[in-house]
Structure formats: C-alpha cells, structure tokens
Image (cartoon, rainbow, N blue to C red):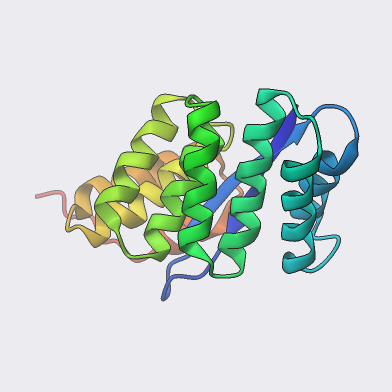
Length: 183
C-alpha cells in the first residue's frame, strides 16, 4: 500500500496544506517514489521521474498504482505544474475514487489555481471520506470558503482544523485574523 504525501504551498499569505502521501506496500520504484515525496530525498524533478518510471515499468496492484499517481501529483504540484498534477489526481480517482488524500491534494491544487469552487467540491469529498489528514481538509476548505465570500464558514472550518490538530500553527495564524462579534 502506498501512502500519499502532504503538500504545503504558499498562496499569497495563505498556505493550503496537502496531506496526501499514500503508502506503498512492498518494495520497488513505487515505494521509492513515496519515500522521495514524503522525505524529500531528492529533487522534486528527480522524484517525479522516479514515479513516472514506476508507473510505466512496474506491475503495480491497483491500490499502489493509484497512490503512485497521487504521489507524483504532489511532486508536480510542488513544482507548480498544477495542470499535470490535477491530471494525476484524476487518474488516481479513476482507479480509487474513495481515496481521501487524493481529493485533499486535488483541492489544494485548485486553491493554488485560484479555482475555489472546484476546490470546495474536492475538499468536501475529502471530508466526507474522513481523509487521514482531516485537519488539512478543513484548513484548506476554510481558505477556499473565505475566498468565495463565506467568511463565517471559513471561521468554523479553521476552528474544526484546530480541534483536529491543535499543534498545526498555521491554523492559529488564520484564526488570529478573525474578530468574533457576539451581538
């Protein structure tokens, strides 16, 4: 089983979090791809090439194939290759449509593309699937909600993110921007 890597990128003053590294069970290039993405063992471009080689040359079970597409998408997203990252997430979802990390990373890519309505669709699905890094899904959805004008929804999503991961300091930074009026 492959895990999906967590991605963090800067969007103006806001940082969407992608928490999707998908673990690969077994050895081989797909596992190396996962480890390179998770631990940043090599350049993003070299790690992307490793993932591509795994997809092209290894006999992967469906779960590992989907995870490798997601991991390569994370690496591409880190390089700013958002359209190809989204293509990888789509390929992963065709194989494994209920992978929360894939939906989470797709949402982060849409935030970076400033396509907030698409981000909301992806992040809602990540939350429905109880994604492994659920705090990141709420955090990212808060970013997208605020950008679409749903400031109250954003505030409550930041609160939920904080509840799920009290140690994630970017949530504290975001919550500090809000003033709550009790009238």
